[in-house]
Image 1 (cartoon, helix red, strand yellow):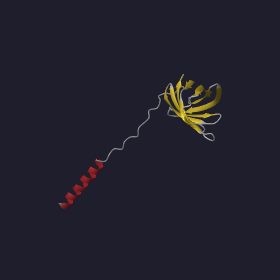
Image 2: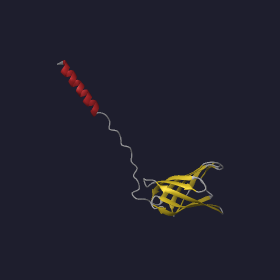
Image 3: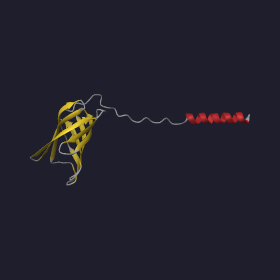
Image 4: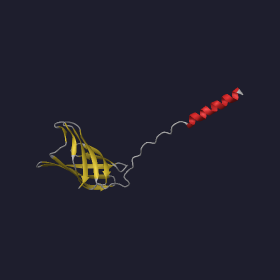
Length: 145
């Protein structure tokens, strides 16, 4: 009788420990943009960053306009124009949209690159990185013009 009671107690302990374990939480899923975004057009907005020569800055003297002139599927090209007082400089760019239809990666002809995200059909955020000397990094919050 003691053996049967011990086996029953052991069986109940095994069942209780299996039934009381927590269910692992599912990883949060980021909802991708439902369709491939059309990035063609002009984008502009403020920039904040750090520059080796200037330190922290919101680039108050600089206006940036990103122009996406062509897009074929997830690949696009165009140029970015910076205007500072009366000085204008333009740099060609090429980029890709990630498989999630949200992430962006852009290379600039004159050096530097961006990673970013499509926030809405008319808003993107880019993180610009320039290594070497002088180095800089900035957050560009662009809206479609």
